[in-house]
Length: 160
Image (cartoon, rainbow, N blue to C red; front, side, top):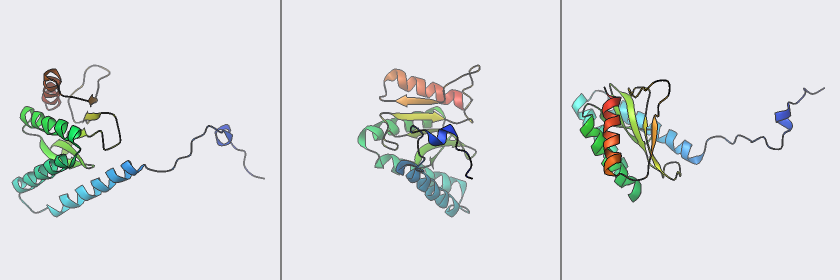
């Protein structure tokens, strides 16, 4: 006798898991490539390693489609100005900014996951705590003066 099936097994609306999307697989491949680069840099000076990682971030930004590239370039400037102690690095193929090797914030292009907007995300390393609930990811469609000020304030708070 076969085991009884649950109602979810018999449901016509149950979705089948087909694994990771092409975008998710690409992000994992980017992460593996980033890790290999990091391993290859072992033994180099901290300054050389930081310079290479910063070049990698700028190269990744340069590869983006124009709308994402314009946002990423400006956000890179804002972050490196507001928190010069954060080190640019690639994280799952995205520009990220880390302190002591741990990502504090990152930019995700709209193109990366075929989204209608880019995002600026903050990790649990960011000191954005505000009561019992606070935002950690922000949609970015354009950078106005007010948006740039907000990003600068968020980054400053994140590293405080």
